[in-house]
Length: 67
Image (tube, rainbow, N blue to C red; front, top):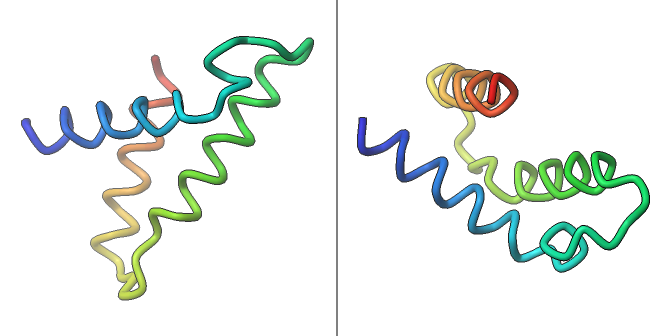
């Protein structure tokens, strides 16, 4: 339970690093959210990507999209 909480908290902390997302300065806010998520996700993929990591990423993506 704590690991999921930790992952989600870190995700939103990294999302806030994108200044435009934090300020909501763009006319198309959802586009910036998706762009920030893609950048964060691409940095987070480990070098030793395997099936277990894929399951974890899929579960995390499902949790974030169902909010």
